[in-house]
Amino acid sequence: MTTRIVQVGLGEWGADWAQAVVPQVPGVEAIGWVDQNPEALKRAEVRLGLRPDRCFPTFEAALATIEADAVLITADVRAHASLVELALETGKHVLVEKPFVSTTVEAERLADLADLYHLILMVSQNFRFFPAAIRAARLVREQVLGPVDAVRIEFRRSLNCTPAEESFYAFRQPLLEDLGIHHFDLMRMVLGQEPRQVYCTAWQPKGSPFRESPAAAATIIFDRGTVVTYRGNWLSVGVETPYGGEWHMECAEGEIIWTCRGDRDVTLDGDQVRIRRRGHPVVPVDLPEMGMFGRKESLATFARAVESGIVAPIASLGRDNIGSLALMQAAITSATTGRVISIETVK
Image 1 (cartoon, rainbow, N blue to C red):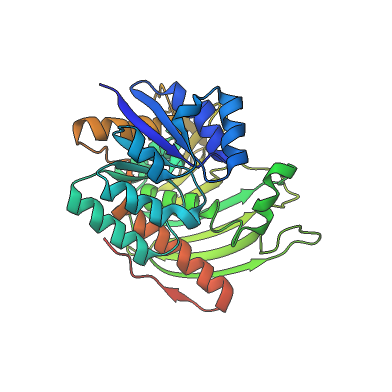
Image 2: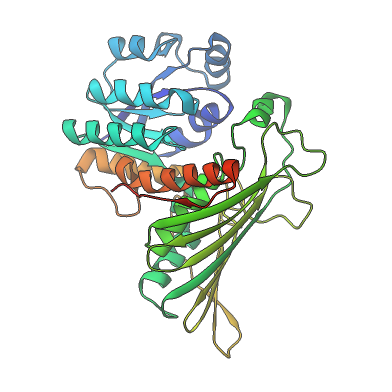
């Protein structure tokens, strides 16, 4: 069975989805493409060899012309809420890029709408679909080294955008909202806990081209007492980490050390997990075999859910993703106000 999708949003990242991800996933067929920017739509049409009669300037035009099972939304986050709502109202399952939407209020409303129509609404938190993250979550769940007491996460990259990506420099929160949402989501997935309180500070490194702070540090307390210290920097002069960051998880009987996503979903070179039992040396841990990973496996998981109605536990449905969105919002509020922010996670 094939899941037929319409893709909405063909900017740089959306075009990468259309070229490098969607065609590589068995059981998924893109049958329409949408972008309100005529130049972006034409570029994608030429670059990807798309049929002109399947390229549309509006989502409404696409829905009126072709029959699809689902919608892939890779547009600007500011358009997510209206696009998701229209897709659900017209009976389409939805896979939407992160961040899901701009507020938890919008997220709750859309999750309720998906439940009302019995449709799949999934957020593509693609960092979940890497073998190191999956193995780390299992080690925690099985308490191989006992309960987790504290976690230290470091993310360091030296960003160098191309002219086509310059709008990234104007991102509302270029670390916390663009990449931090992945790290926050991984915290919830790997720990199996929900955040309850966060204190965050953000800053501008010298010579930063960003309008908003591309570096931040946060202390997050989770509901079973685990304390996470997180530090990220898009303009670090230190040794770069994989995009998933470097994780040191201190447990009752030792430490779990892991990293994931070394590049843009191309290889698994950045994935590794090691453990160190108290009083013993560090040893590597085997990773699960994965035929696909990252965005490809995220899309494949979504397609399987559309076909079978069964959602894999690893997937982040819209309602589950509210917890990650709430933590991201709270971190931004804390960084803006200088206050400790309590988090009410909505299930």
